[in-house]
Image 1 (cartoon, rainbow over the protein chains, first blue to last red):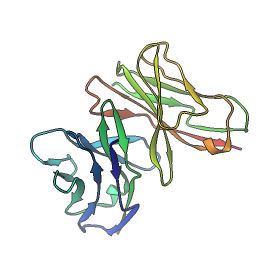
Image 2 (image 1 turned 30 degrees about the vertical axis):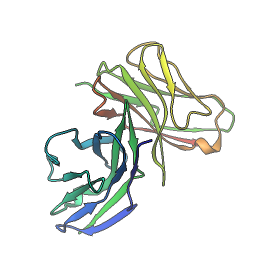
Image 3 (image 1 turned 60 degrees about the horizontal axis):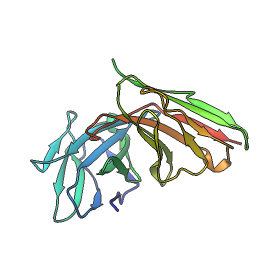
Length: 111
Length: 112
């Protein structure tokens, strides 16, 4: 069965610093990978996705993730974070017709 | 604009009571999902539906049921609420590609 591991439950960082949120998946077949973001007291929103093609995918607010098949990873990065990026981030893998979510990483950005 | 709504947003109930959480979407999506979110567990799938009259069990379906009588609604029922069902519940829907799920704002349920 497919699964997703997010090793870091919390990542504290200062504003304007770079950040990386780690995600590893297990799958023996083609993968579709996603990052979702959950702002406080809200539902999840799709941040970015990898379906095929370029291994580097970007979001509209400066995040990017790179699909690395050899390392079975899909880490999320941002070169300079803002206070407004404070949220919980979930990595997910599509398993046939469903999504399997990781346990989430809480990104806390400090001024 | 299309949206997905949940009601109530907050609910407090007692052990043993039946509780129904509503989910309504105007995306005209065939696929609908119910998740619960708990610290340390992320989101876990409770039940899902691919269309009217179709329902399927997810990872943590014990104690929950759903019914799908139309495209727009997938209510989640806790037959006899237990304290272990205290959680935040999210409804989601997706189109035919399954590649993006749209989430509702969530319902925070407390079972005393």
